[in-house]
Image (cartoon, rainbow, N blue to C red; front, top):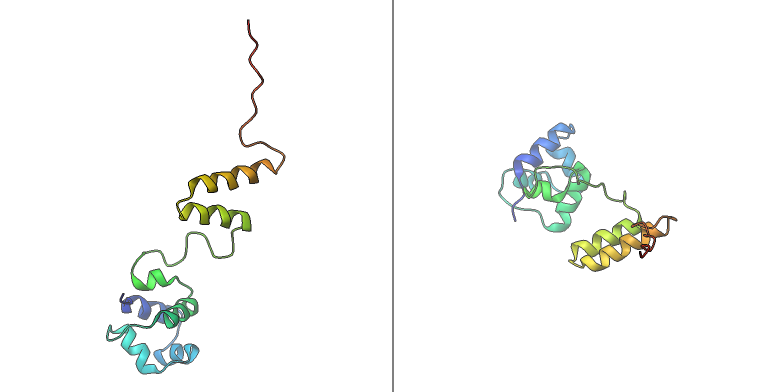
Length: 122
């Protein structure tokens, strides 16, 4: 998958880096930054991650998979319980996600669904 060189260049310039400055921060050669920005070559995933981190965007944004430079939910902002629920949901295990969700809600001294009183017969 190809990196969007136009985005890489724009982000670099917005942060005030020259190609040489970004190359130095990433411990790469200036020519390599030039190649990435001009679509001559693509960085391996390990370098793409470093570039994204340095430019404070997601690798998906640099690859053109999303038009949103930042993740919808910043990394590390979820509690461990929230991360477990989200992980189960993303894995397609909706039942597990719901169980985790309801267990978390009920531990906060409030049942998720209010308990009904038995109906009076008669």
